[in-house]
Amino acid sequence: MAVAVVLVNVSVLSGFFPLLAAWYNYRRLDQVLKLMVAFCLVSVLPDLAGLITLYLKLKYNNLFLMHLFDLVAVVFFTLIYYHAFYKPVLKKVTLILGGITFLIMIGNEIFIESIKDYPSVCNTILCLLLIPLSLIYFYQIFSRQEFTHIEKQGMFWINAGVLIYFSINVFLFMLYNKISSVEKQDFYMMQSITNIIANLLYSVGLLCKPQKTT
Image 1 (cartoon, rainbow, N blue to C red):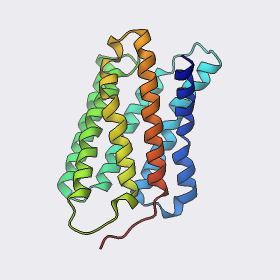
Image 2: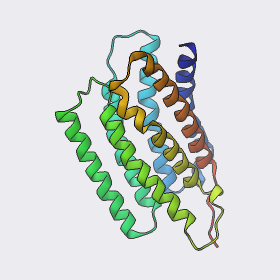
Image 3: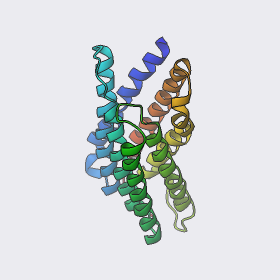
Image 4: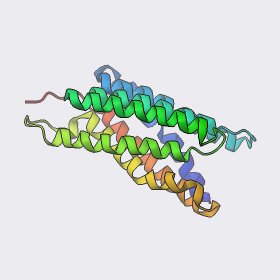
């Protein structure tokens, strides 16, 4: 239990790492990375609110913030991948998938999940959008003909963070409402660990300088 609490605290704290990296390197960030900065800024708020209510022992249901965050995340990542993809067809597919995902989430909020419950369905839907987009992005950069140092590309690290976080947690999100309270402690630990890793990767990406291809 103590380990889980420590990991939650570190996980919330790690959300500020990308913001510090962006503050240091903001003048060198392109449009895609600036969108990622805005997303990181928004993503800190639900975790911070949850931590505050936990420590103050407030009987306040803030799960609606997670539902709202999922909707915001769809918008941000749709825009991020739309600008990150080179081919027009991939841009169009991203917009279509993002729009469909957003509408499905709205339908879920109205007819299936209550905003007072953990957003298991919404989180799962978000994963099912971002896992394919992140894999397609990796295919795009690895199949390019021109030479480039991909490890120096900010979006490479950010995409790695997206893929790691959402591919590992997709089944945890999917099964959340079917597991016991004891097993949910393991879920929170896994979610915290992957969130820390993702935030570190986001930070590396936001510290990268723009690279020219040759």
